[in-house]
Image 1 (cartoon, helix red, strand yellow):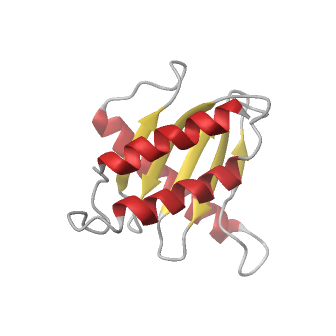
Image 2 (cartoon, helix red, strand yellow):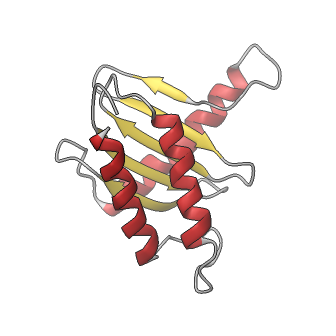
Length: 140
């Protein structure tokens, strides 16, 4: 990683519902549960609106958005899952990190016999591996 730090991760199901959220920095917005759900839903809605507004037919989904205080990076999975990372401006490698997070999701959530698709992710192994992945990312 270069230039900044991670702030938060959101994972939405294909319906735009929040199935996972985690803050990584004290500077990340501290929202109540209902507000987290609203933000996650809005992220999915904004991505769909931007795709519809695009003058290019069959444009790709939103992949990044940069604001004064943060950068937002999105990764859309063909099944409809949307992963969103918020980071400080200048943070590099977010797209690769999101792909690695998806790989962890596939390995530790989807292969968990107790996990139901599109439901909130509550898998200890996923959390453990995510923590390790993020530690490795911030060291580089």
